[in-house]
Image (cartoon, rainbow, N blue to C red; front, side, top):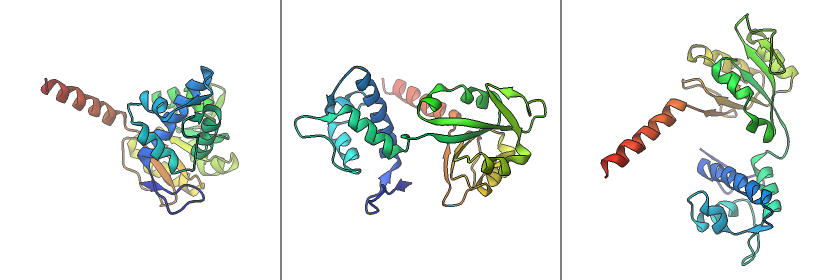
Length: 219
């Protein structure tokens, strides 16, 4: 999948480029904390095992940054990348499924830090519905379409069993939500104008096991 940067439909931006922008943003945040005024493409590349040329290429998709020989102004580049990523303003988020994974995600401080504010919780467990979970009242998933609209939810995190995930996603789409982060271990169908990201932790562990096993075989 690729995306067009705002104002420049002729260029297509790959998912890997967007992922690296997030890495640069975090690196710049650290440089800012250490009072760096400028950094070079080499500085940004070093911590992420990239090349300076890759850094320059990624940034060039979005305009001209920095001055040759002087580097990039840390604060300004961090601010511009935040705008590109859309994290220069708050996002209203709903989390569906207050089980083990969902409960942990509510407590994940990085969401709030980056402007992703979880303001609604949903579940189908009558023991949880109506309870106060870390400052947020858990709503009945039966009312999800209306409540998502009333709360002006922009993004949804889905942490429900695979058997009901598609039914829930259909309700979320009807509510007008355009961004979904899915933790359910199932392939979901959404319209073309809805952006779906799948987070499969088992697959990530499989990648690690592959890397470790093959590294050992090469020794």
